[in-house]
Image (cartoon, rainbow, N blue to C red; front, top):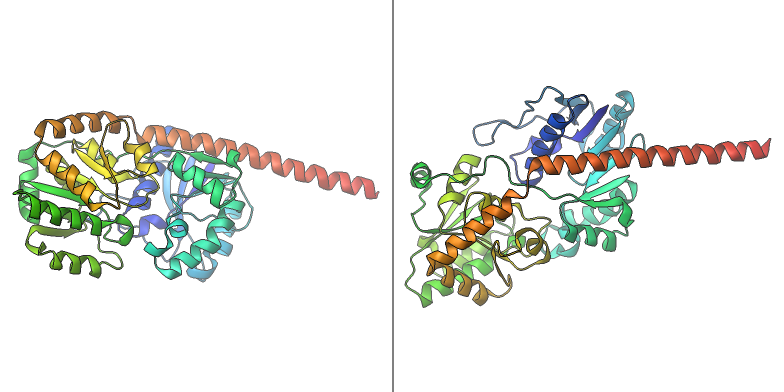
Length: 399
């Protein structure tokens, strides 16, 4: 059986969807050695590989990167280039790991809708992205044989806002990458020194953009600085997104420039060292599809403070993290102050987080995803059979 997956997420420096595509495809191939898996992308694109982006080319023998010709990548890849490839290579199924699937109904399709932030929190995205999402998300949801979401929270949203049949929508949780595990302090010292990170620091990981709600974190950090004698450094690790200038202006107004460090994009090795050695990892996001950074922090033993929003309650609940109101900087400041002053509470969170993170594995994610593939193939064949039967019945009546 030949199964195709969207390879385009692997052509940029890896963020959440790129890591999802790489980890999922490799584990699917490992679990099904008799099947062939292909990461398909336009022939003008290249998979990113480099020191800053750990080994993203497939290393499993039955997983390959395949390039298909496309006269116009922007306009015709999904309507012509990829559908033609699917027909010519007899794909048993195509999985769109980044919201998109081929427009033509040439094989069963599964689309992963990671979140609906561009619809439900449009003010945190660029206008052109919101316009595209309003057009494409409903179309993709209607066209797909099955839909995968990263969480039950997003599954409910997809059924409600995209009017998707609940029986076609399946929640398949993600998992921390294998690179994320605890490393002792002596192994993280060199990384911290190179990045300019102090011994005592709060850590945020993610793209610097409005949805991540860093303004609330900065205000909480400013209140903490004014009300206590803590000298904990604030470290923000991640690429710079849109509307980040306002955040830098806020930091300057609050006189926190000297206490705040932006590392920019970091490698997995660097990030593992930061997670393993931070005093607290904090994730105040307003909306998520799953929330991998808190789970990755937990897998490295970091005590976690996270937003009290449905998806993070689902991922980080059960006492594995301290949950706070993401729109109340005073509540965030109070949680930080209490945990910074209580080493035992931090140690308890660390233990609970490690146990919680261990329940999420890519083996499980791939197994559940493959079950969705099998259901999609059966459903598509049944639908095609019913259509052919109807056509045959009409022709017989006309005779």
